[in-house]
Image 1 (cartoon, helix red, strand yellow):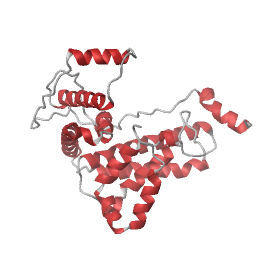
Image 2 (cartoon, helix red, strand yellow):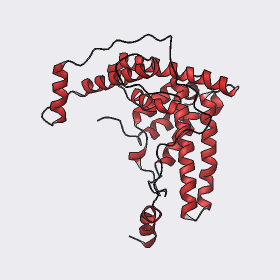
Image 3 (cartoon, rainbow, N blue to C red):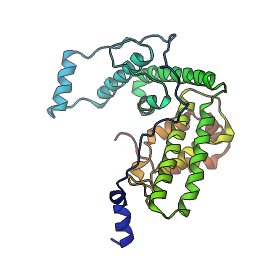
Image 4 (cartoon, helix red, strand yellow):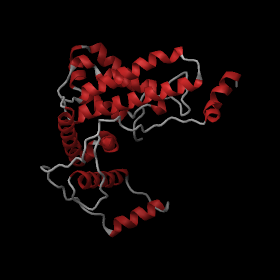
Length: 282
């Protein structure tokens, strides 16, 4: 190992820093009171039987296994119960006061990875999350006295991160580089969040934004970011989003789909790039 490599690997220890991978929303982006949906029907889900509880216990003990689709269905039901308790105020799950879309990100990521066999559960989660995002957009627009579009918010975050990304090569001081990398990470994190929100809430397509291309670019950059704030020479393919998530967004990005219909070369390029992304399961 070279001296430069040794120094790079120990910087995080020397400076005692590690990146914050879950940055808080900026001031003014959370609604004043929790989101509450009053016109969405409550879904009654089947409860786990005592036999199911025994199967869960045996699996946790390593004495048995539960089929993947059964486990995913139970996880989907737990997610639906949590969303209903938090957004409808009904059900037995623990309630969370949701004031910003970042709190819904785990549910959105779970939704994007659900297989076709769980289409009923996927539509339930889509309904709850989608309506919550629309309600958030309406309320934050009123509070700001300015219309909010998730796609526009995503673009603003992307360009803020990209501007800093262009500066990073000009910075030599490790401490300064760390703070710039954290700033880039924060901006790309919220770019990704609001892009996903624009897709799930089914906002009208804005072709000029090319958000899917920005999503791919930011994903490859973030895959080079290491915990100590340094940048790897090459992308870490394990750090890229799951292929299932990328395909989910690509299929539902109307601006991208319009371009794909007109440009066969773009379709070939997309298929080529997708080989770098790992499937969520299998």
